[in-house]
Image (tube, rainbow, N blue to C red; front, side):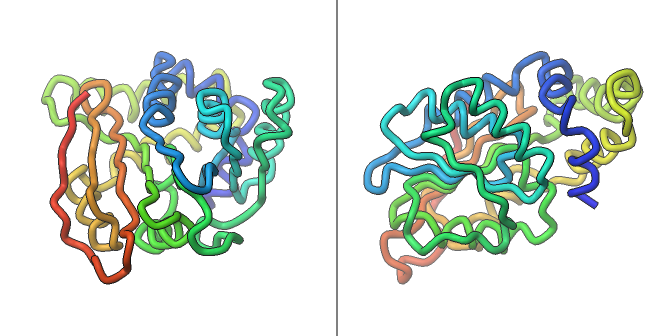
Length: 243
């Protein structure tokens, strides 16, 4: 179902992201790229890369790294390849068709493993996080950028009205499948609270988790670390950051 949704909107996906987020999605990815730390492998894995925005933003900011983007929706990958060519990044960013639950890479391979606005489309989130942690180097970062309904009563009301009523109706003018945007709105509404998602990351084995609330909590960036040794386990204290 997820493959069908994104295959049907791939041509207008970037336009609608920019339009409906008032271009804040660009700033959110840039913020995430700025928090990345490359210290050993000098490689990023962008899971559910879609049209490649996070991969491109990171490659432009960190010029001495290699980037791999994986996705399982072929039309979205084709859009990513065209954008890489336009940005002259085809030699530095590799796009691979793969499932987030079965990444075709060895253990301890990437300094940073990130996913932007994709974890909510994966039903087995704990398994996806575990797989992301597997391919990260010890001490490497696992990053998740995802949208939430904000806590503020005013912003929550505005956000729900916008995503549940305005966005799907406006999408009819731009997309052949406006129902896809009903799904996207529902997937945000059904996503766990920030605290619940941090708990999921900790249960997976990630430590030292930091969270950053962006744009009044509309989006959160989660940054966890793979333990240097498996025996370190879970349960590390979580530091909460505000931006």
